[in-house]
Image (cartoon, rainbow, N blue to C red; front, side, top):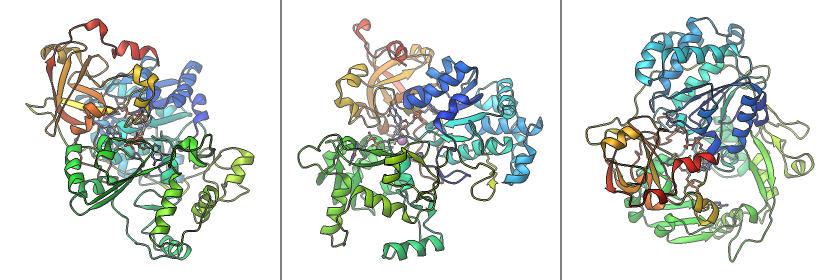
Length: 557
Ligand SMILES: Nc1nc2c(c(=O)[nH]1)N[C@H]1C(S)=C(S)[C@@H](COP(=O)(O)OP(=O)(O)OC[C@H]3O[C@@H](n4cnc5c(=O)[nH]c(N)nc54)[C@H](O)[C@@H]3O)O[C@H]1N2
Ligand SMILES: Nc1nc2c(c(=O)[nH]1)N[C@H]1C(S)=C(S)[C@@H](COP(=O)(O)OP(=O)(O)OC[C@H]3O[C@@H](n4cnc5c(=O)[nH]c(N)nc54)[C@H](O)[C@@H]3O)O[C@H]1N2
Ligand SMILES: [Mo]
């Protein structure tokens, strides 16, 4: 979902995980790294222990803010203001890397002019971050050679997510923080192997290895190589598909997504699913979406099959089968191959290795990697154009991969929804350490389920008090689209006027509340901002017994 195409090409970390420990300045924004990427967070902690400066830009106080030099607690959805103001400081104080800009980029003037208006003082009024803190952060970032940017969904899950990413890219380009170790532009990828899925072309715009489907040369090459006519236009993105369910889309094949938990404004989707003629799900569990399915195809899980996974740093690694799949479950590729054959396509019996070879054959960035090489040499990082190539630790060494890095001027656009009289609070959603996305897996495991047994909403003490809510009370959270009930977690982690809840819980689905408006380029939904209200349903009878309290969760990280 966070599969954004940045100015530099593919949506992937430009640099590698191990380099983080050597960084001297870390700008972490919209990433709750200790909970969502604990291994990467360990590298960040290591860097900080070594003396690196850490600045966290996030509306919430997350664990990383406890070790940060500075926490920029911005109003949700105002990142363009914050980042443009940082660019403004870098330009006006002449901290630009002019050599890098001249030799490796295009369009600097457009951004230089666009950020003129974005003074730190004006930014303070909109973001809530002190002008002086914006100045200091901009100076430190620009003047530290090993300075890296790390970001995730707090940046991308907005109607202006692509704008946010462009603003980050502009900062990287104007400071020349690219093409050497411990720097760069690093989106920490989400689901296991989401990087691999994107690399393989599981997106409407790319063939394998980020080759655009609407590039005539690429299109001709793939038609010849696959021997079938191919559509020369990009297909629908996820957001567009989901909105057409029950309208122009009458059949749906869902493989490994629990859409009624994870898609936004989900009651609208459920109406569509009730209209639809045929729904197949290919799953390792009877998830919530299974209630709507006509056919359920049992898949094997990661430990029950062979193959490769690609991690955030573009490293392709082997996964080996440890146990047999239960019952009739089969590897996803076996199921797909069987369906293709039943439908009359002449797909040969294959192996994960043969499928991998076929997929990388026409993809220049990937074709030097094979199962056999990984077996011998260990995981390899793309770009890796031929079998003799050692792989790539960080991108753009000695220049930008595809010609010149393009500056993109961005003007601020507010989030789709702003607070109203009936829904005065800003709701943001995300994940916690103990559960994984739709929680089909983690709620079946006794450990995580015990650690975090139930849904909650974080609310600032002042907002709780004015609503006569105390910690642990049962509350209703409402938006224009729906209503759910869960526990109140009264906490200074959130800003006043903001509330936050995880989307893991089927009995209190955050996505009954969220807006389904997507980013103008990628379609990624605005999960991070909608207007909401919280009301008391029932006061907690025995406050001591409330197990979900933030204090206990906090200690574990
Ligand atoms: N334990 C665990 N780990 C996971 C997952 C899981 O479910 N559980 N899911 C995986 C997946 S699929 C993904 S994509 C990643 C996601 O990893 P993250 O993106 O780190 O996870 P989120 O909880 O969505 O939160 C992002 C952060 O963005 C902040 N934020 C919200 N709004 C804004 C804003 O307007 N601006 C800025 N700058 N920040 C904002 C939030 O306060 C939060 O700290 O995690 C992966 N790892
Ligand atoms: N409100 C809100 N909603 C969000 C987000 C948010 O921050 N806020 N984040 C969004 C993001 S970034 C993401 S990635 C999505 C995640 O949302 P989902 O993709 O719906 O969540 P997952 O739990 O990752 O589940 C995937 C499904 O795959 C199944 N599965 C696991 N392994 C296999 C396998 O090997 N084969 C098959 N066939 N199935 C398998 C699991 O049982 C599960 O049902 O949620 C999105 N929704
Ligand atoms: Mo994700």
